[in-house]
Amino acid sequence: MCGGELDGAALALGERRFLRCGRCGVRVLDPAPVALELESEYGADYPPFALAARSPGIVTRFRRAWYTARKEGWIRGLRFKSVLDVGCGTGEFLVKLRRRGMEVHGLEPSRFAASYAASLRLDVFQGGVAEYRPGQTFDLITLWNVIEHLPNPVRDLSRLRDLLAPDGTIVILTPNIGSHQADAFGRDWAGLEVPRHLQLFDASSMRALAAKTGLSQVAVRPARIDHVYLGLASWAGANHRRGWLGAARLAPAVITGDDSMLIVWLRRA
Image (tube, rainbow, N blue to C red):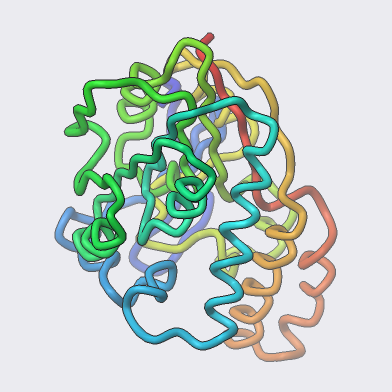
């Protein structure tokens, strides 16, 4: 991404590992999954698609509604009339914005999720960023837990920059591999999500990605509630693998340390 060298295994995970760039700090999954393997990861069993895949319980409905409200809060204060949600999933966020009178568009690689979103009368393109030709620009482009899933984030973010209106904003939410929580939990950190997460970023590598794609960061902030949620998921995984005593020492990392989720606002450089 930045032209630096991958300097060895930052984290070994059975048949795969994350390699670290010695210059910018991005972690790269090695070996990367093949396209067919990735496609199978985003079917009806993928947790974010739960509302479409089955009749969800009240807890699942609350969690999805809460997450949609969080996204809305992160863009509050931005001036926009048109929005493109990259990796829009089953479309809950776009439905919310449409009710506010926004012009909404989605891009979703998963056939299952894109089909469901289209059934809600949303304009959703099923495919990747490279193939998307909307014939317009957007005031707001969002990537909620998406940038880490992209096989070629430099190419795709450069393309999204071209789709950004002159005064538009790109908002990215992504796990922070440079966080204390990620270090503490190691292979049990819930932000790894192997093999779906192909690259993992920290603050330094996000700046490098922005610079490489002709964008500049205008703001970066933590997502504290999401930090705790990710920590609890990590602790549950550690408890399952290491046992209660083995996981007990990791409990402080659930809520302490620098944040395990980053929200980044980008504009044209």
